Image (cartoon, rainbow, N blue to C red; front, side, top):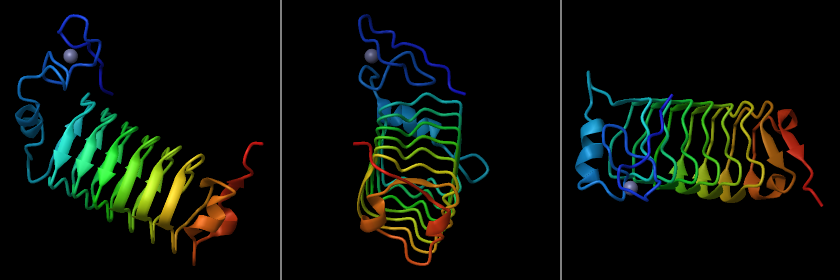
Length: 197
Ligand SMILES: [Zn+2]
């Protein structure tokens, strides 16, 4: 798992980027620093135990990448391809995902809570025991995915499709039943909580 270290700039308080003494704000060239970390080895990117909060990735191909034990809190991902990527035990909370493609990815025991997710595809994914609490999803598809024990409580979902999904132990608010397209999914296996009143 990543080890947080404070930024060397006095009074900053933000976490330093892994491999650097400075945070995303105080690093002299954060883009090239991150690009160095994203250099593929043996044809694919591996990010292990890295603390990279607040980074911004645009038009990057992370297909088949392995991301494990990382913190990418409040990061921004624009048109990033995560095709068949594997993300385990990682924090992608309060992040922004725009036009990203996770088709065929495996997302396990990871946190996407509070993220803004728009125009993204999670088709044909294994999304197992993940935390999507309080996300704002717009035009997002999860079709043909396994959402085992993944939680969407408190999230705002607009034009979201979950067709032909396995919903075993997936948790939703009751309201999601009306706004998400669950056709051909195992809706009886999901857990639909009544809203707190
Ligand atoms: Zn700093």
